[in-house]
Length: 186
Image (cartoon, rainbow, N blue to C red; front, side, top):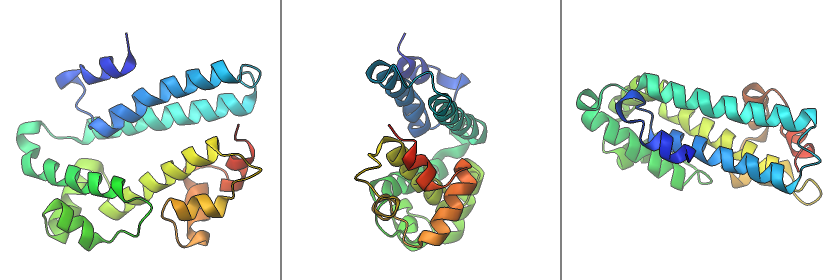
């Protein structure tokens, strides 16, 4: 059946956060669409490497959120607060975000929100936001037209203002420079 349906009905045996399940479920149709639209590219080493990296990233994210979520009865209000902060951040990834704004959205103080994120997501709130932004840039660069799109434009659009730090963080996360990703796009 449909991967989204399988992940959505896994119930208690797979307590991953909804966003991670959705991203993994969306990845498969995206890959199949690329195979259908560009069958001549699917045999290339670059295509296989990109697909492998995307699938591994999605599965690692799913596994990390599955393993780190306490049982729903114990997580309770902290999980709700983290999800409110995540939704707030996802809606504003291209805008400057502060710890203060995340705290307001979550309804928690700074220390409580940081502790909840570390417990439930394995990282601080701002590091989590940076990882979301990096994945967004990576996805956009993979689908961009290298003739018309610039790495700087994509990075700024995704909320990165310090381009030197962005480039270093991108390379650490994906093992290549942003421009290398852009040049192997479609």
